[in-house]
Image (cartoon, rainbow, N blue to C red; front, side, top):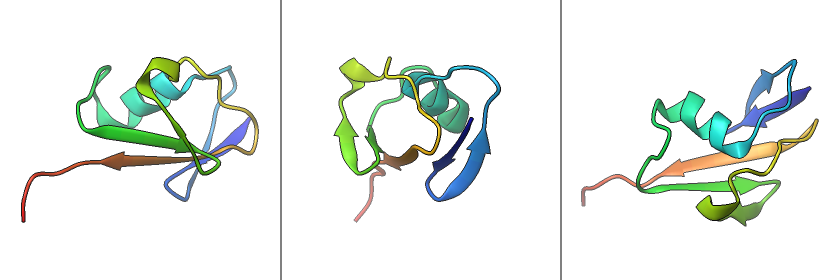
Length: 67
């Protein structure tokens, strides 16, 4: 299966969830200040069990402190 994360191509031989992608990208299973969109639609953390489909485009945004 092929998908993208923040415009970068990724692939997986197995089914993968949004939660697993977030953990792989951030190094944290339950990160704070992270928002995820799949194909332009925001996915609340309560729905991160969503299985990524072939061709999905994920955007992971991390809030940072600063001014």
